[in-house]
Image (cartoon, rainbow, N blue to C red; front, side):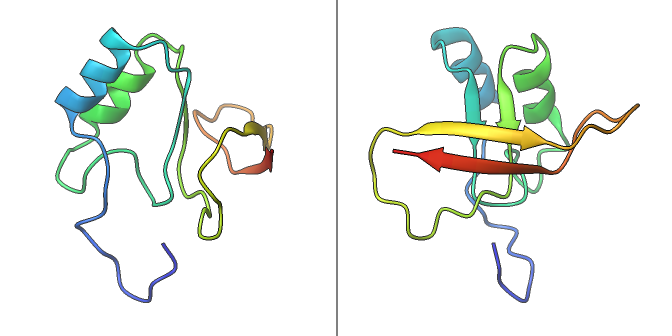
Length: 95
């Protein structure tokens, strides 16, 4: 995430993967440690798949470098921006 050059091969969801997750799980939160939940060549269809029913919260750009595997509570505190469809947020991870 904090490289000097943009990496187009980052790990993310293609539309069919996002669709499977929406239709086959009860996941309510998807967070990734790069700039997008969609692949570089996706064109936004993964975002639309996740957001169409508004039950899944997407958080992109998480800094997870030194986080050990485990169960955590995540609290995201977005800025309130009128007329926006997204917002920067401070996310807090509690073990």
